[in-house]
Length: 183
Image (cartoon, rainbow, N blue to C red; front, top):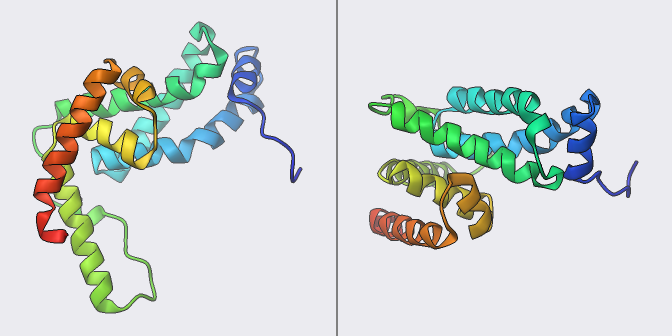
């Protein structure tokens, strides 16, 4: 119903653990798009990102009985997605040759020159992100694109907030250097 407050994550997690598949489906609907965006940005591969998100939800369904704090389900999902992305990045040898061709299309209706410039900027950023370590890329994406706190990021990547700050500072510096031509 319009104007009705959304059911808190903790309540949905508790209901899902009790066998309510509708509650779990609500969690999936709530987190599927943000986790997919995270995975696409970290992995730079839409199909692989879809696979990661699907794996996260299948794993979450199986592991839901072990969740100690129902309200922490959102952080748990982000941590699972981030870890799966990092594992996939570590197992890669090289980036597929067509990775840049799979970036999001420009918005229709814009002036052709602006579309070309925007696409080139996106390609430059994607290339700069690939130049980061997997840990730096994950930290940068979680902070800059998903607006997660340092504590949430630390939990997601299995480190401390101080280490997150360091990785983020290094990632920002490396990206700024790589993107100097675009300022």
